[in-house]
Length: 206
Image (cartoon, rainbow, N blue to C red; front, side):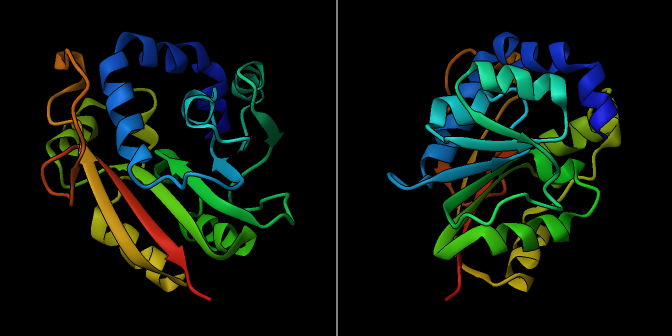
């Protein structure tokens, strides 16, 4: 999976400029559940598009080329995978934006996130909901990125989280049109089922 992002890192990063209203719509949805303070980590930080605007200090990614861009955006980046986090730190919250659908072992990523989170720390996942119009569109489109993706439904993510010691969930959704059609930031709403991008937040059990 690393080779895809090392090969297409410029195309990946350019997407956020080309579809800036979709990007900022996703950011606004994440902000709804992001803690106001504390130390954060983004697993699969990529080029730092989310961490840099959300004030997340640390990130990890297997792509050297993408990590270099994230570092230039002020993120403290380590090279590595979510399945084997090189941290003993206890973070207040962890963000996993889109990355889970590219993980080789999704359950291990969630288990590792649990390990490095403080008690009552929060895990935040942003996904393209498999059951949404956008999930179905991407599964048919087969872009260089999404043809390798393993899409998840919201219920599947919740089950993964419950199996790994998380509870007290909240949900926000956005992206109600195809990204290229969005001409203004779409205001996130609670719950899921209509938006293509869903943010799921859970709390680590004591």
